[in-house]
Image 1 (cartoon, rainbow, N blue to C red):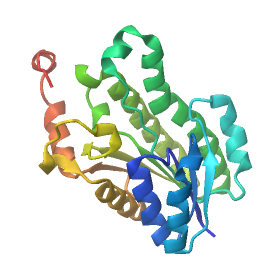
Image 2 (cartoon, rainbow, N blue to C red; image 1 turned 120 degrees about the horizontal axis):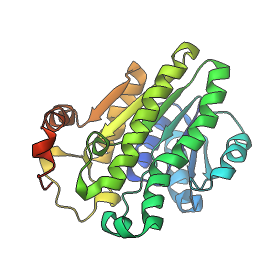
Image 3 (spheres, rainbow, N blue to C red; image 1 turned 180 degrees about the horizontal axis):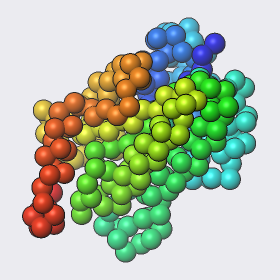
Length: 243
């Protein structure tokens, strides 16, 4: 059996990834804090796909628990997808470091802590794949999501280095950079429909890219061109912009 480990499994994108991979023949470990909240979802998905779907309790902020968590898995996964994400409150984080640290540790430090352990195992085994969901927000810092964007920038750089490190071990590392996605995290935001993906679209893009062995993808694809333009804006102009 080929098990896929999805961390941050309660997110909308993670659920769509669970559907995509289980329908493609993968058994799943769905890992999240308060994972019991996924019981009905997992039961329904297991019935529909006839795959083994196990819930695993994981707090990405409890770094000291990560090794025991991975060692407790009844089967070592063939692949892992990190769908961990916390947008947080930028304004609050500017004056309250507890919020700033939660944003940084959720989106970066905690993910790195766990992926380091998994990467070491995959490297020794000489196989597997790692998918990290970063964000276009990490491509250039903006005042509206400075903390979140900086954490995602760190994650993108980490995944790039991990891809380099694991290449000779035949372990594939994919960096995913979504733009706007209609999820619980973005609920209430006024997002342009033409640039906003559904979670199911994003999941399908990730599955296809992972199977093709791609290194970095933007989803929707148009975000690749948008961010190329954004990154070419001179800093003397960019620093005055309000977006």
